Amino acid sequence: MFSVFGLSIPISATELLLASATFCLVFWVVRAWQPRVPKGLKSPPGPWSWPLIGHVLTLGKSPHLALSRLSQRYGDVLQIRIGCTPVLVLSGLDTIRQALVRQGDDFKGRPDLYSFTLVADGQSMTFNPDSGPVWAARRRLAQNALKSFSIASDPASSSSCYLEEHV
Image (cartoon, rainbow, N blue to C red):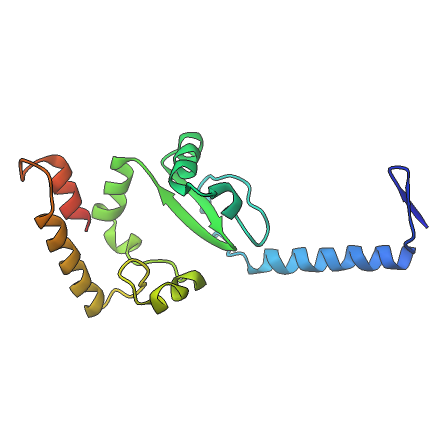
């Protein structure tokens, strides 16, 4: 018999030890699956995450608002987890320009998340991690569509240039 907060729970010491060992084993396995930051490098700042689900509950129904709040707290570069996968979040025009224009090769591509394969069998324009000829053709198509539907009155305006440059 075990007593917690005045409640008597009919559990033996063996069962308690077995439950504790199982919890520790699961915790150890989850920690072993998480990718490590190479020695000498720092991980980007970010909030504490739940094991296995990451920040899915934090993002809620309006992830853009949740990410905006997180960027105000942690800065323009932060890390969250979707499930057990770390995701780098960039905000701020200068930070995004630095990543996409000056360091484009380092930031190209998409993470290989299981949920991406569920959306259009992994072949949609948004969720395709490939950067081959199919991706290039889709990019040209999207870029031409965005150019033709641009509402900017002056083609040299900064928003139009940023839009075309980042697509």
